[in-house]
Length: 362
Image (tube, one colour):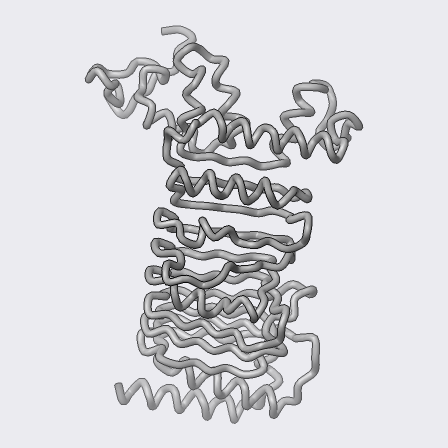
């Protein structure tokens, strides 16, 4: 049929409609298949499909995948107001700081209001590089929690430069994946409770400032199902030990390679994870390492870079030896970085021999 998009597989028409018939156009597919097709589009693009036909008019309101990106929204505004204007050239009317932010905020709120709490949310993504009132962020997160959100991806620039994690998110039972990017704003955690991320399996935090008094380590140890923990360019506000203890964690990544980040240079790292299988560390060498209960460790990748302070070769060697002893159960060990070469070859060989002998005795 001319003008229609046929859905075909090899040799036959694909997918049945809700009535059991074969679909001849994409519009005849059931909602859940259309949702899957549209899942890779941002919400502003999904909304545009409402003009296609009556079938598509309200389809976007039941989308379980919500993706709000400020940059894409700005481009859409330029395309609508100035069709012949390049996005990168800028338009004073469109790029007015407050009007553009307000338009984006209103769009997100209207999109959430249109759902009327009738459909669940599988994925909620918000990427907003401009300052935004905290009350909006809190409200949107709580609405996502009320929609039984499973995956939450939040990158924002809090106006106060502090982001307090809403208590409703910490106790959300449906949440399994959480990604936070905060543009080096402080991450403030609510008071620890018995019910801490009960269903969370993957936690990714980037460009955040962590405070010791928030007991970040205690939060990690209280997540009963957490398997993946990734910390990228996170700063420790207080140079206190970073303690990561978990009976469920399988993969741990700590990366601090930006010049602005000092990593764990002035801090101690304690890791005690009985089920940990993979450990990746990229950044300045910590002040000390206390690596315990890593009998299940399989793969270790360590890439050490120069930190903000100079350490003697002897000091680097002592810390490196202690670190390697903690990794003695690993099957694969990759060690690289400028700090490694400050240590004498003979001493490094001796500690590697100790690890080899330990492996033979297992």
